Image 1 (spheres, rainbow, N blue to C red):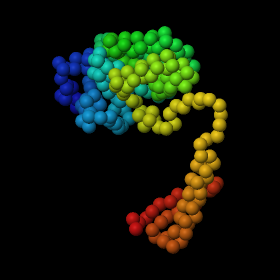
Image 2: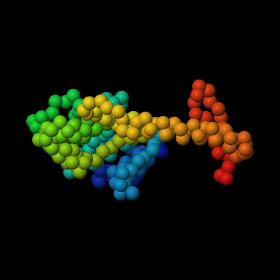
Image 3: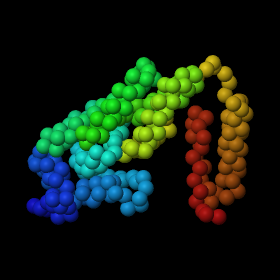
Image 4: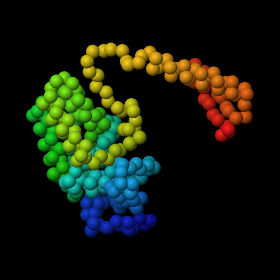
Length: 256
């Protein structure tokens, strides 16, 4: 009773949303509409990030609404999701979009082990074009996207100029044509999900061992002087010693 429906959007302007409601037997809540519209056309006119509470339909409602709207045939829409959530997101998109809305959901895994030649690159490009022409949605994982980026650089480094160049051109096209929707963006954009390809023979890191010895020395000085400051100004700084050789917790109690 609190949500009569369609108070903040028009079914005539967004028929796909109406079909999603009918297919899922639910009403889109105003907060979901507000978030979806902001993600579709950010007021900042640049990349945008939205934070939602659990249970507000981020993956099951909002993401399908955004994907269905953006996948209009003029761009390639990718829903980027963590590996652990990929199957759940795929099933959610299929449930919401493959019925009355009639939108196909595509998957295209890619890794360093993928055997890449010119025919493979052509097949990849054709799959992307098919997805875009059918107004489909591509479910991608961070490692798939990063692997495709690095594979072109790796092939160029291996003197495979023709294949490497085609991969780089495909990546340039993706950079131009893609619209990415990141689910759990704080995790996806974390540095631990960055991908690095090792090339050539093993050799020492540049600037070793000074690059870590200098940092350790700085932390030693901070630790030593923090104890001195606590003795001199106990009302302005708090230092908590931690067991096991861990760095102390330092808290400033005054802006002075």
